[in-house]
Image (cartoon, rainbow, N blue to C red):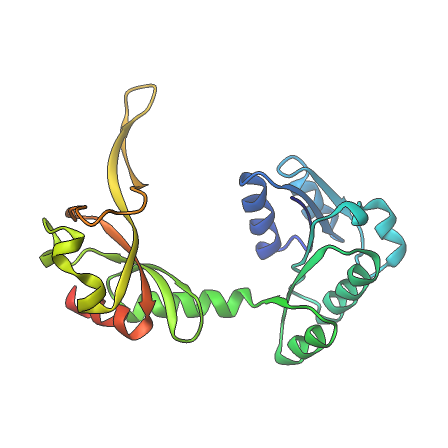
Length: 229
């Protein structure tokens, strides 16, 4: 996809690099020349411009963009004006970062469906990792459900998925398993990587140090983590 990101702070920069690494054509925009220059060799193109100035958009392929992300994190007014100009000049899907509840309300009034809160979401994710001692990572689906990576409970080791009957016992679904694998590079050094084994079959046997990727109610994920303490 062709994606334009407005605001190259920590969030915007990280997003631009990640999207580029996954095969997207990313154009980064920031009024700070230093930030724009920092990204010029790392993404498809970077532009130094004030995104609140409508005339500056003539330098951007707004009509060809599939998505525009407003990642501005320091100036709520600039973020709102930028979002309004994008809505006026393009039919691209707009994802906008919100800085406050009022900002949320304004974005919703503008018809923005995809609103992100990076700091809040990062805090919630860290809270889950702290509260659930054996959780490796967590993706919140909504207030009740999550997809979580959990350390394999010792009593699961050596047993198959059908033997464990996790769906009935814990009301969780195992989506996949991350398994440690030794990999040797071209100069002979060996490193350990976590490899996805795909969709596990009923007879897949759980190994020590496996990471189980499970989906279910947060309460049930918490229970299985407690058993792993």
